[in-house]
Length: 275
Image (cartoon, rainbow, N blue to C red; front, side):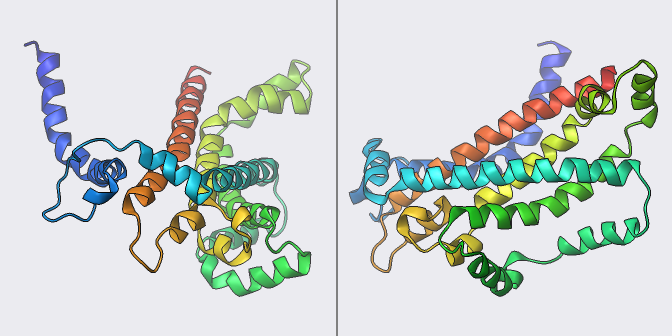
């Protein structure tokens, strides 16, 4: 066994307790979702089911309307993330590149907004949604999630944009490039890591948000995944095998999105290092 193999083995042994602690809830969720219904409540409990009941997923999907809730969550999450990036990138660029009166107060205001929980603003948000006539409308969630995400995205992107030297853009201008061309070809590629992080946080917040969706949405066909999963825990004996199947499928889009954003994050960091 060479030195590199020994070092790798020691690192994995040191990390194994942390990995087991992190993966334990996901393992329980997966095995319960594959346990036949008549074995979920048996005592003493068994970690490994007698057979893998894959039909739990199809039964849950067909009986609960999971597909429509999945489409609703994807619509709200993707659209709110795009709105946040569309608004936050030029706002952060202006804060990072130009000086104006009240700039410090505006940035302080952005930080203060992050200290407020959405549940504290629920009454005001609901009145605002009623005034817009968007009760039980998915676009209301898009506006609310984008509103919460923009403040954090602007604050984080501004601090990162200030680390990008203005000389790079000025060099492009001297070579004949226009402002928009230098922004697109020089500035934004260097800002990819921060944009990816902002998009990731916005996506995860919008995907996991529950309280606002519970208050604003009324029709069963318009609710999002978080509300749908919570509704499966009924007053009487819940079907935990179906609930765990729904929770497992709910985590899949987040894992895919995070993997995709992480790939672009690493690419952006590498591109910035080379340049």
